[in-house]
Length: 81
Image 1 (tube, rainbow, N blue to C red):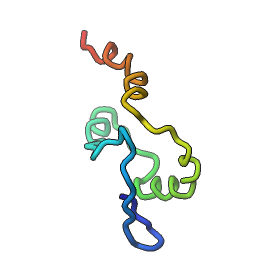
Image 2: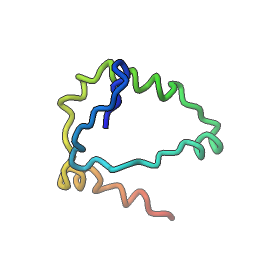
Image 3: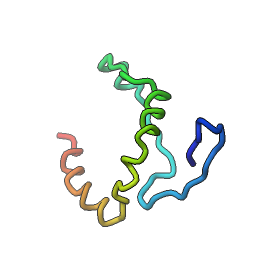
Image 4: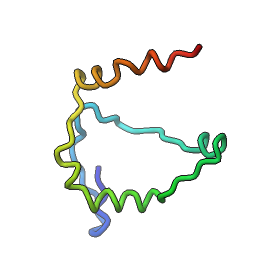
């Protein structure tokens, strides 16, 4: 789903292959442990992305094969010592 701010309506677009159904992003831990604060408000970031949305029109679509290739090294770095 995409929210069209100017027209105050929702536009439903199909989910791309590999796109998650939802995310549980939470910045509370990095804020508390590292005293980090975002430089851009979420709403401002969304507006900035929408201004340059054409930049993303040719973004690669994730497929099971491209996801596997892109993440093949991840797990060796995620192992705890």
